[in-house]
Amino acid sequence: MKWWKYLAAVLLFYAAIAGVLLPVPRRVILNETIRNLFFHVPMWFAMTVVLTVSVGYAVAHLRTNDLRHDTWANEAAKTGTLFGVLGILTGSLWARYTWGTWWTDDVRLNGAAISLLIYGAYFVLRASLPDPQQRARIGAVYNIFAFAAVIPLLFVLPRKFDSLHPGAGGNPAFSNYDLDHLMRLVFYPAVIGWILVGAWLTQLGVRLSVLSTRLDDQEDAV
Amino acid sequence: MPSILRKHCHAPRDNQAGVPCYILSTFAAVSLRQEIQWLIRREAVQEWRQRAALNGLLLYVGGATYICYLSVGARAGTVPVPTWNALFWLILLFSALNAAQKSFGQETPGRLLYLHTLVRPEALILAKTLYNAGLLLGLALLAFGAFALVLGNPVADPGLFLTALGLGATGFAASLTLMSGIAAKAAQSATLLAVLAFPVLIPQLLLLLRISKNALDGLDRSVSTSPLLSVVAVNLIVAVLAVVLFPYLWKS
Image 1 (tube, chains in turn brown, red):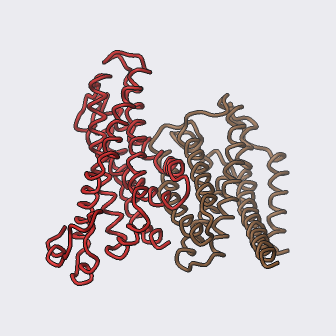
Image 2 (image 1 turned 90 degrees about the vertical axis):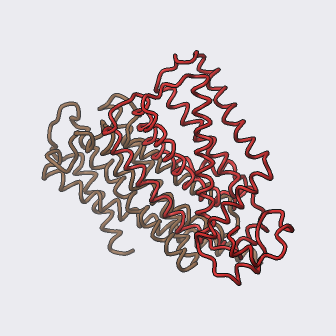
Image 3 (image 1 turned 120 degrees about the horizontal axis):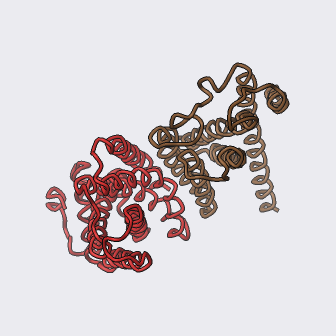
């Protein structure tokens, strides 16, 4: 096992324990739910990083026509989607106790839903193309198009619309006073840890996919 | 057909699809603009020869408007502005999906291969996008007319509203034409087109709904400047991406 996998495990154990035990600033309404910052926000960081990697592999595939790049793009997209789902679940739970509702009409929430829809469409598209070369190429085209056309907007749009979400519409984000030094000590390790876990999951997915293709080929040969 | 092509064309009447003879473009150096012009002409000719698709679209807009009118159950002028706005853009969105569906869905593989030998892929995607933009603008104006007739016309700032329609038509056309090219490669392309296009269109749709709402309410134009600029930027990004990515799609 590579060193960075140990690092990921250590960082996440630390973030999980310190995130629950360390003192946090007392805020009205937020109260203890402020700790969700350690668990919810890293999901979006990790998702953005992993999906960017996926698009990078899609570009690499279009340049080289190498099917391995496509496998990486696909598996990274799967990991990114998993983080997206976890991000929505943790966010929804948090919203229930601070906003009093599981879901509300808010640009950030819409953005999260849109990015999940994109990758849902990506997987449906892949599933409906039986030829591996064609699937890889067309999947890469959609991956790049959807990512480049939508993801930047998810960072721009919240500035244009009013939002309840922290970090938008005048609500404090972790960039200013909300995130004190102690919180940073937990938050950044958690982000790094989850990104590393994302890389780990993707690597495992790729290995599994390569092995199952090899198994299929062997069965075909027999 | 650009004159440079026509000069060399041997048998223009033989072509049912309205495509020129293969030899032509190999002889004459044809600019991208000429190719686009010719392709747009081809789209229009093809559309006119198979009027069923076009008539179907017109009926779709008319029928959908009438269904909205009946289901809202309101007489002209009594529909709340946000409802009018939402219904209008939804109908536009679904009409656009239907219009884009035939963009690549109607081309036979043989015809696409033939075009592949004739023109640059950039010319094809640009021509189809421009044609679809024109078609969608026409549909949007028709839908506006139909809405004004049965549900009343609450638009307080027609200039801004028409700008939103124009931007919406070009933006939808730019995204949907590429999506149509993608979906046409797969089975069940009708469902797939909608699934692929919805998430990409939602941000544009949100911005357009906002501009359109401002136009309906007749708010000061300065309120709409920022979303207008965003929509223009999104349209540009989408169009550039489509032109860059389409050649890869065509190769497969």
